[in-house]
Length: 553
Image 1 (tube, rainbow, N blue to C red):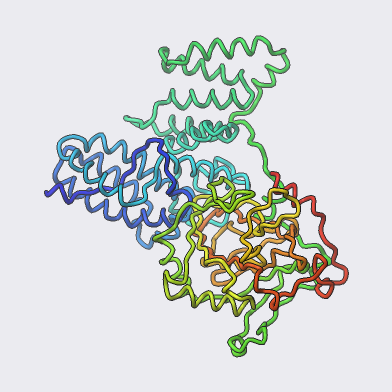
Image 2 (image 1 turned 90 degrees about the vertical axis):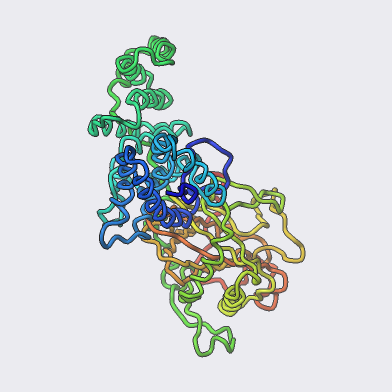
């Protein structure tokens, strides 16, 4: 076999400064599926060359084929499940490291050299992706009320496919370990308890993780969760498993001293705490809206309707835009059939080559930065990138009745494992924030937003407006549309909105931020916050305080 033709897709399980995280984009995870198919062919060649390594390599192959190569398996849908997405990332990181130990003998060294060449040209999961996946899991659990037990078993709402293998002791350990390091100790303890139970159930001859490591991190999670009594009990288990464990004696003395200072009642309460411990419940307004549990104010409901709109534009006379009123004052619309399937596919293909970790604008500047409030990958597409972009821009101009010469480039975004965008404003001129963001004078502020949904999302991924109790679920080809500014030019804080975590599915969106300069003939200014002609009788402005609270979360 010509080893120079042998290449693998792999990634070293080390902590690096990586910005192209796979976890932020499900599109990257999907790409790994196609790459993994090529890996399997190469592994078959390697089996022929090194017969003594067949057992280890076949086990690696089976982990993939058990899920993705069953008859009739819908690969794209399977990988959209967060557990499958995590297992794929883990398969190509931690599992690869185990296999690599076998490959580094003889021909394995040559294989690794070819691997590194391939790794330099493609996006591969890293340690940061395990961290991102763990944080995404907790975000999904908190938002959609999913127990750790159900999640580890692959059971999530609105998912009826059975081709989701239960997570192993190692899988649960990796999640719990990362959460403990990130300070999410209640969920860390839950994941590590399940890892410990699965370790005993699996009874592997050559386990991929030591039981003592699971117990050690479990005691760490219990201590930081406020229960040194439980931590001391687990330290005793560490002693039984490995009397020479490095931190054993120091932990034992530390916890013993702490417990000596507790009163009897407090110590007993800690002993009686359930295992695993109860997780902090996040049952707030935002989470309820993401689950579709919000209710519109009764005074608004009578004014909701659907209608055809032409804006007196000849391009819309034969095929008017289909508007659905989702809220009044401020006006929020759901516009149906904005762009076609072919256009959406071409936009996604054009964006794939330049997707980067999404950023947010820093307060008081025109600079951007990475932030945990936004987990996705995005790309801005100018009209020179692909012929479909100017075509779509014209369509957006017709539908919104705004001048697209005064608009930002089309932004395309793809969301990853638990991907979301926390509550935020699209406008810069914030009346509640003295550190208002920089506004280019020749463009002005963002007067309106059109957000196009380019995929259907099986579960989660809704757009919510917390102040207004509005939830809009993605529908492929349709868009949400709203005005960010009042008619006096100030930001409308009622348009605070968020992108809910994607629970199941692949969420692609594209949005157009329309600037205010040059739009005065399309949406005239006024000296009051909003034109009285647009006020709906009986509809009052919501309290502004919820918006402030959401931004301070």
